[in-house]
Image 1: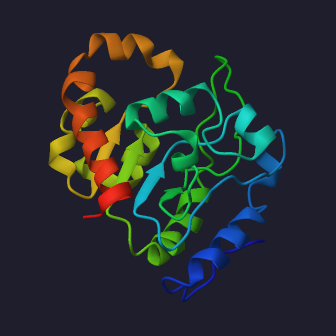
Image 2 (image 1 turned 90 degrees about the horizontal axis):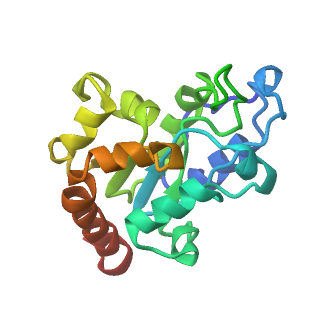
Length: 207
């Protein structure tokens, strides 16, 4: 069994932890398409994006957020693909690294519960330059905010200012959430301008 190991120190350990995470097979028996961990991180990254888990297209290509949800996320951030995939500036570490399969209703299963506790602590220990973490979806918010999150995802995202400057919670950019965006116009009017300003300051000028 692959393990994260002990004593993973910053920042030179990041490449080693990423390599071991990409070789992880802990959840292999539970993965319908087999293990293919998808993540990106370098010690110099300033922005961390914590999403849910890869979908089938991401599993096939090995590129995180390489789907319609990724297109919408990049639109929210107002950055292009080249910038988004520059892992010297942006780390992408989902709650589950492998595609977890489908649930009975046709959606994706939750991220495997073994993944984040095993790999996030050693990765975060090495990502010492992170100034902002985007918590995309309920699973990332539950893990990183714990008891601080609100009763619902909508309430948590609406209270985004309470989690700064370290975190900004976001809904998942899935096209299934288009109705949510229409019901919550404050997200585009109030949160997106702040989100874009923070992200661009980190990526272009630093803080």
